Image (cartoon, rainbow, N blue to C red; front, side, top):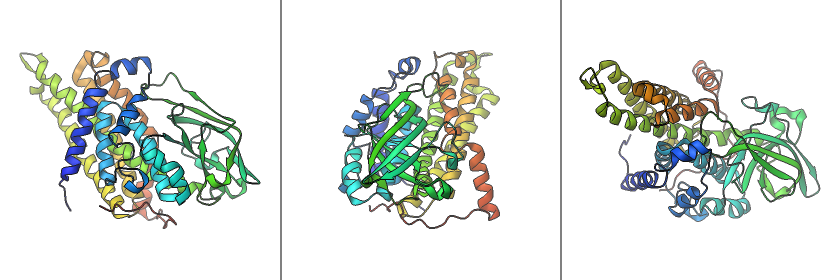
Length: 395
C-alpha cells in the first residue's frame, strides 16, 4: 500500500484549488441565490484539461489515473456541489462509460470531443416512476430499419440544458425486464428531443437539473452502446464510476465545512473564550475530521482498484454511502457550530447543508447501499464478470 500522492497529483490538487478559489468562491453565493449555472466554468475546466482528466491521451484526455479524478471532484465540491456534479456526470457517468463500452467508432466520434471539453456529456436513466427500481422505466426504443425510434421521458438529469450528448436507457424488449433494456447515445440536435430545467430545488441550486423528452427520436443503429439488452449492465457499471466521483465530492464538502468552522471557531467568542475552546464544539470538529479521513481512505481504495482494472462495485458502494453520510452530518454540525448565523446565507454552511442532502439520495440511496453491503457480507450478492471492464490505468 502506498499512501503518498505523486508530484503530479499534488500539483493537480493545487491547480484545482486555486481555480476554485479564483473562479467559483467569489461568485457562488450569488449563483446559488439566483439558481444560475455558469457554463463558462466547464470551458475553463476544459482549458485546464480537467474535463477528461482520467481519459487516455489517445482519446483526447489528460491520461491521469482515476484517483486524480477523485482529487478534482474533492476540490470542485469544496467550491460547490454543482460543479462537482457536472464533472461527475460528464466524466464519470458518460465519458468513462464510453471508454468502457463504446466501439472505436463511437469513441472517436463522441469520447474525444468530450474528453477535450468541446462537447458535454450527460446521463439519462432516472424517470418519474423509476429511480432505484430501474426495471420500472417506461422509455422505449423500437428498431425500424437503420434507426431506433426512441420515446419517453427522463427526470432529475444533470446538465439537461447544457449537454450535447446523452447516454439514454430504454426498453427494446419489455418482456425481458432487466435484460430488455438497451443503452443509446443521443445527440441534442436529433429531431424530437427537448429538455426543461427543474426549479425549486432544496440544494445544488447553482446546477442545471431537469427533464429530457423524447418524441419519436430517430437514433441511428450505430449509436446503440453495447448490444441490445446490455443496458442494465451498462447502467450499473456507469454508476460504479458515478458513485466514485460522488464519494470523492463528499470529501470536498467535509473539507469546506472544516474550513468554515475552523475560521469561525477562532473568530467567534462566547463566555470569554473562542468557541473552539468549548469541548462540545471540539467534538463536532473531531467528527468532521474523522469522517474526512475515513471517507478518503474508502474513496482512494476504490480508485486504486480502478487503476488496476479490478471491478469495484462493492468498494465504491461503501465509499459512496459512508462519505455522503459523513458529509451530511458534517454540514449539519457546521450549521450548529455557527449557531444563528448558520441559519443565514451570510455564511456558506447553510448552502453546504442544503447541498449535502441530494448525494445521500441520488446514485443509490443510503438505504440501497445499506442493503447492498449487508447482502455482500451475507453472501446473497456476488458480482458477475462483465463482458467489458473499465480499462486499467497505464501510468
